[in-house]
Image (cartoon, rainbow, N blue to C red):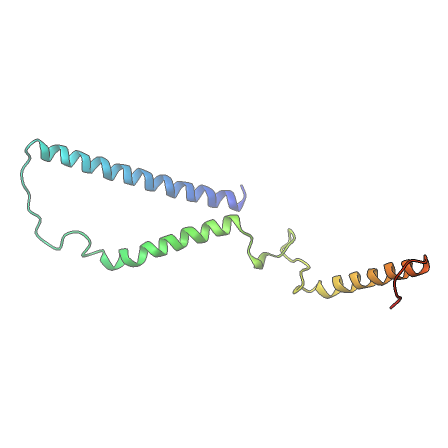
Length: 127
């Protein structure tokens, strides 16, 4: 399996886990409301309640989780600039080592084409 397949499988597993967790939470809430409707016992909660112990972590971890998901998706679907152009990852782009040689080859071919036009009686100036 390729790297993209593994990352895609990981993202799918995370999404399935989130769906299962949300479904279980909603099922528990529904069950609790049904028991309360039947005349259950009133329980008073004393203490900090929801979020006091986890407030700073939830505030910072949720955005980090979102950034991690977006980074994984970007890594799967977009090629980074550091990978290059070829299968080896070292392309001959304008800023690569082969950029100057590629330009020189193009420049030489342009001069050859120009000479052919002039020798054939075509229009153009020889440089």
